[in-house]
Length: 248
Image (tube, rainbow, N blue to C red):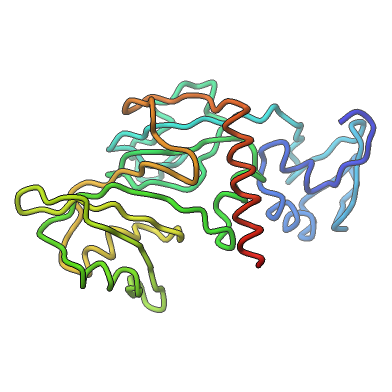
């Protein structure tokens, strides 16, 4: 950063504390101080010599780190759990405990998680206006048909006033059960499970296999790998293209 000016919200996001949008909320609510002085002005800029605190906590930039992780079943996607359930951080090495997940997978689900300390990156990948596709391989009880798939595409009210949409196709039948590939552009809690429950075909297993251009290739269950700069740039280019198409 040297001594060039940097927007305060961007600086906060660069520390991994939160996204730039959340930083704006913290600034306007009076939670941010620069050199001991409360700042509530959006657009305020700082240099590397300035000391920034958020909620009385000194924050500093850190090198951005990105990993892809094959989450096993039986762990929730959270730093800690008030119910005492096991979390992914119980099995991930301590040196990456500062990384936050991009979205979540529920306790019984497996598959791809991206973790990073880049708050802006998390916001871009999860912002509802961008609509990053997330693809899942799902085994469901019973035999679904085309009417079921059309119902999922048209939308199902999974909670009062909350409509969930999914694009699905049947890849095969295994005995009395159906194997599906389902693509989501939303991020609602337990969305696929609730939709299939509504249709009378409860989920047997659910695995996320990709998120945008990133997939599980080369990963074993419980394993993680650092994303290479080329992969990160690929994601950024992909997001730019999505945003451009969204604005058309």
